[in-house]
Length: 335
Image 1: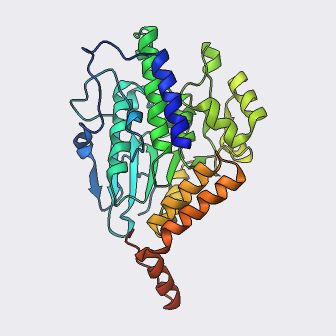
Image 2: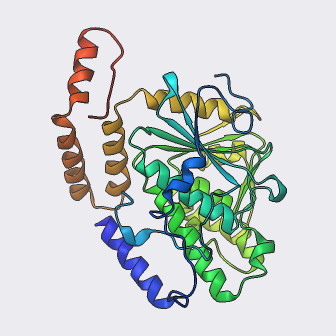
């Protein structure tokens, strides 16, 4: 039901904003998934993403189209897969220091490539999104690039951004946004699309779009009130007010606010905990929660029943019972 509703929304959007002339080159994530091969498996933390660390899209119509040919991998998004005992943890790292990780066409393409790669990776159990820059998560849209766009190009770009963040939200694995420093506009909307948000006390979060005579256009008007409530979300969006980490925690905008510089440590601790759980159980739990919230209680409980039933005949369920009886850690395979 949720997928059908979203498809209808996309169909209405396409009717209002038809695709450009056929001569325009587009990005097709399926054709360009191999470009995400710039990602690498790492056996130890890498400096650009772990400086403080000790150790199907269901509807094909949701694929994002971007006004440029994706003939090369993005320079501003890195995809890292951890290995050894942390195998199953994947990290997407924003790395555009010259623009405070502002989201332009290249970064949007990089995010789409990365999310598609994670979706296709059967070994991925949890995704973390962080910044390679200190004191900056993402400053929002690249307004310098935006000034060069026509209104129709802006609309098309924002629609692509919205769908990209929806694809992140729809990933089958748990996702964690690690916010150190600034997360404004599209940067906060990126974090809102994740399941969990961990920030430092000195983080600055906000949706300042009304100050530019626009509104949050990549999901902010919908995801923020679902987290903090309608009234508070309206205040934050109407005023464009920025909040710090501790206030964000108190209003439910983030799950944890920790000492500055330690958000990555906290997120990694949570990711490791999640990574030890049954992969299929995580997938079903996320589906039951996300889709259930869009249903009435009776339908939501039926959904929960269906998700539970899908786990009854799995090898992982039997392994969990055996490990409990033998007082050992389970070894889950996702089967």
